[in-house]
Image (cartoon, rainbow, N blue to C red; front, side, top):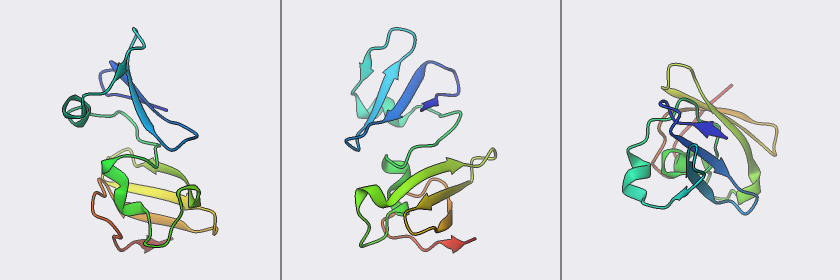
Length: 103
């Protein structure tokens, strides 16, 4: 769960692997992708979204990547997966099958 930088929006990742964005405090779900794309997030812990497409390897299944976190500077992303790997990426990571730095 992550709040936008201005605390006007909240994003969550569901158990069915969907990213959902809500307005705060109304709780109304935001579905306009153009509006979602303009939101600046204070934190990023989601494994879902256009910003993190590159964290998924060519043969990964949805449940393989378990966690993600963007650095305080907002330029790096670290993930953890089912194979015990911790991977470091540039953030955002919008290109599929990007090369990683293993830690």
